[in-house]
Amino acid sequence: MSDETGMEQKVTLVTLVDNRPGVLNRIASLFRRRNFNIDSLTVGRTHRQHVSRMTIVVDARLANVNIIAANLRKLVNVIEVRVVSDEPHVSRDLALIKVRTDDPESRNMVTEICERYPGRIVDMGVKVAIVEVTAHEEQVEAMIEEFRPIGIVEMVRTGVVAMGRGIRIQDTQYEPPQMRAGTRDNGVQQNIL
Image 1 (cartoon, rainbow, N blue to C red):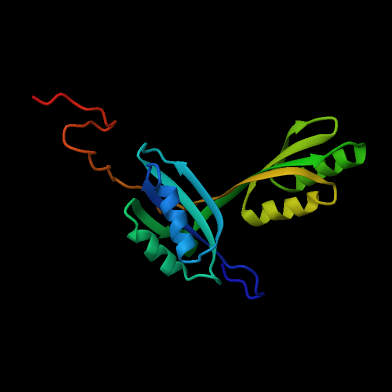
Image 2 (cartoon, helix red, strand yellow):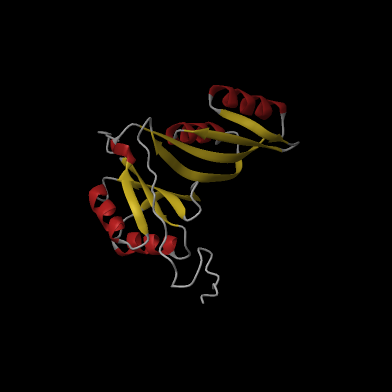
């Protein structure tokens, strides 16, 4: 996280939230209202169907991460917030990069770059190849920079996901409140006698 060259100091927060419509909008609105910039945002379901996990990366030079975490904790649908940058953790970013390979030289260069990085060619066509790379964000950035002179045609990235190492487990026993008396978890009305 510490970088004395004046470059970005990225901090990663992991938030467990209710898996409900509108939660992402509430969190994005919080960042908009407080003028916090999101560098990366990844959202996905967890092993609990009613809980989603959000990994949010911000530049610590532009916003105090403790203030961001405190503001997130105030939101109704937020279950837990942790700053995983403060502890040993594993983080990964996934990118699919479509690169020009319309001649033997470019094909060879793409193959050589993939051998130096944790990338693999997932599709090789006559004019383009699709490369998949899953690595730490800096490695993904470095690989992208090596592909630029060859010619990036298209690219998509997932954003960073992170998880604490070892016994640093971020899970919850949270159960959503019942919608109203007489309803089941799926919201279907029960016949109550």
